[in-house]
Image (cartoon, rainbow, N blue to C red):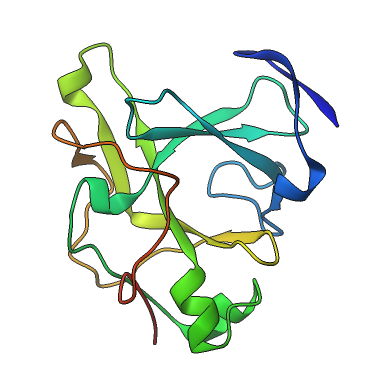
Length: 160
């Protein structure tokens, strides 16, 4: 399937890589279908490209790049909305933080308070707000390092 993007031109994607966010995101409730694209080999960032709007591309990262012991404690009812119900689903979930880049790279921040949770087996996602968490909306990420495709280790997502 080909999609048009403002940054990458027309790209060919496998439709099975499309992640649907049934409720959209905070600030983007009407955009629901996205594909995760690598930024660069040496970058901690990924591009969450809208399938439906060529101009909408969000920068995301694994929140553990900014806070190595990051844990998203999410009510089980919210996780159930995207088919994350069993411990096995929780272990396979992908947690992403939205990133704000600045002209000065040292000013880049990640929203650790409202992560995106993706169920990779169902290709469904949701943005959650971690009420009562110690994480910030604008956490500095100047020291983030790059790793392979974002994936979560046991304990990085906890159903409450």
